[in-house]
Amino acid sequence: MTQTAAYDVNAIRKDFPILGEKVHNKPLIYLDNAATTQKPRVVVDRISEIYARKNSNIHRGVHYLSTRLTDEYEKAREEVRHFIHAKHNHEIIFTNGTTHSINAVAYSFGERFIREGDEVIISEMEHHANIVPWQVVCERKKAHLKVLPFNDQGELMVGELEKMISPKTKMLAVNHVSNSLGTINDMKKVIGIAHRYDLPVLVDGAQSIQHQEIDVQKMDCDFYVFSGHKVYGPNGAGVLYGKEKWLEEMPPYQTGGEMIQKVTFEGTTYNELPFKFEAGTPNYVGAIGTAEALKYLKKTGIKAIAQYEEDLMQYTTQRLKEIPGLTIYGTARNKINVFSFLMEGIHHYDTGMVLDKMGIAVRTGHHCTEPLMKHFNIEGTVRASLAMYNTRDEIDRLHDALLKVKEMFG
Amino acid sequence: MTIDEKQQEIIEEFSMFDDWMDKYNYLIELSNDMPEMDPKSKTEDNLIEGCQSKVWLDAKTEGDKLVFTADSDAIITKGIIALLIRVLSGQKPEDIKNADLYFIDEIGLKENLSPTRSNGLLAMVNKIKAYAMAYELKQNK
Image 1 (cartoon, rainbow over the protein chains, first blue to last red):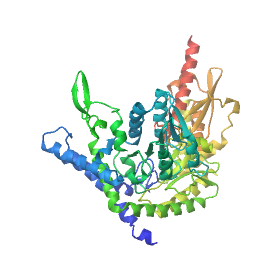
Image 2: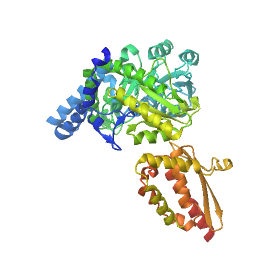
Image 3: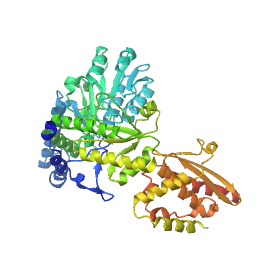
Image 4: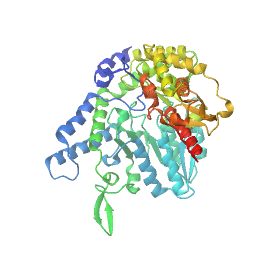
């Protein structure tokens, strides 16, 4: 196939040292990429280089190391801006991850813009990280949380959105790609509707940034958040992108060093963007590591990755469908390489345990999306989530392993 | 048989198995052979919610002994429950309370009782021991 010929997956696999590991004496087949992705050597090396040769606290040093690392940290911000096509560097805030980013917006935006009787809309397919922070802000502000449903294919019922929006609606928070179903939501359409009513939109990009090109300006989202570790970067680092007009208006949600301009015991004035939202010593190693991962993706070609993954998705869907009694949850027309499934009469935990013994890493359970599981009236699923380095051969082995599971429990 | 004798018995049974597949198949067998738990005992109170699998545990007294029945919605978990019940049910509360369940480690299933697994099994063992302690307290009053 021409599109995969250009994309040398075997060469890419060599960039990821962990893929050569064995588990229970079997070659590791890592299919838990929606939980976290593995790291290419360039990222591991970059982190190790900082700790070995360059470490210093940033933004406050007069000395050489501090100045140099501050410079690299700011270059990382520039790299992120470029990767997601944001307008300004100061619209990129480094956080600890997606959960941190959403909590920051929920708190800070909530403080400034959400009043008693107001409404926040989320969707039925959200990760708990994009549910609970909004529940808490609604509780604090005596506001109401409304839920946009999805259909049985796992597609958002965008047609319902317009009916749900009222003058009291202050925020729409929705994931770009569902971590449990793999659905790619039509953000242009969703945001288009919301913006007709001047409703800002937060996009949870935790599962989209690693699979497709992101252009926050074209998408026109008001906030876009993601984690470094799901995009082949280090864990404990994440990004909050926000349009300048919102970030300028929002108060700091954490206070301390770095985020101040002037402190006296009578009062404090805050630093400008982005520092106003980066209190304390930031995870500069994580931020620089994340930027290194984005550089790696850019070099490989995000379009080529997306094409390869699309091809692998078709193949995986077909192979899974060959297994009698297997149900896939999430059959949206537009989706990524996430396969939530159950085999008839077999508990997801049993399936996962047996796959583990065969060296295949999957996740089982509700994947932090309990309301989504409730929609399908199930307790959980087995989830195989693929990444840029998975292969057809691995999918064949998954297929055979599932037949073995069926034989054992069926 | 004492708790330790039963543990020894299980260790010997498992020593026949060469690989994990045989062990798991045996656990599936144990699970299928386990007497059905009375549906009336599968109450909210008796439910131990693991993140991964559900476990139900019921306890009653027979003379000076504690008798347990249990169930799970996952088969492997249920198979391990069968082993735990075999070792701990029908024993004296004092022995249950002090039991060192080394057999799980010996038969290579230790990971299933790890707090990180959240399959309900560790919580079940803790609850069994709590029943034993509560019973002892009641007796000593």
